[in-house]
Amino acid sequence: QSALTQPPSASGSPGQSVTISCTGTSSDVGGYNYVSWYQQHPGKAPKLLIYEVTKRPSGVPDRFSGSKSGNTASLTVSGLQGEDEADYYCYSYAASNTLVFGGGTQLTVL
Amino acid sequence: EVRLVESGGDLVQPGGSLRLSCAASGFTFSPYSMNWVRQAPGKGLEWLSYIRSSSSVIYYADSVKGRFTISRDDAKNSLYLQMNSLRDEDTAVYYCARGYQYSLDVWGPGTTVTVSS
Image (cartoon, rainbow over all chains, first blue to last red; front, side, top):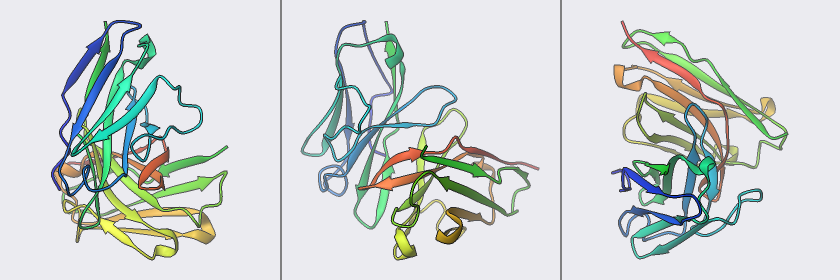
């Protein structure tokens, strides 16, 4: 049950786009379309942004989008805003009936 | 309003036990899978356990298998986590989260567990 690999940090200026990667294996990210993404502000509970790789829950701005290629999933935040500064986590179903998070990425809006 | 609220967090000595509860409201609890997730101080999120509707399927992370037990009482709209043989490294904020297609679509605010002598 190794954690999925995310870059520790990412940054971008307001209005720009930034993409956060999440790398796993064929036993988790690559093997199932059950990748989701979460945003967490300091001291708050996480919030679901993307589920089933590309789907957005109602109320989540379309500035947030998800994709997957092979064993790597990605979250793209377009039109960066100050409120997007937060930690972001990917999460995937994995073989052997487990679920696993990525290590998290701290996004800074410059 | 769809809501989850955890309770039961406390200061406990190493080797001790604790039972966490999660009260659900604003939705029909029984058809949903539920999960426990924790976050150690300054660290990332860690999935701990999953329980499907009717308790038909249960999964655990290796880090808690054999020590923690997840359960649910659909009549009380409640989820539980029995934690035994607690260790220092179990110190964390514990969240319950509703499951949807192996994602976590509703989260509680969390309850804090501190394991220390």
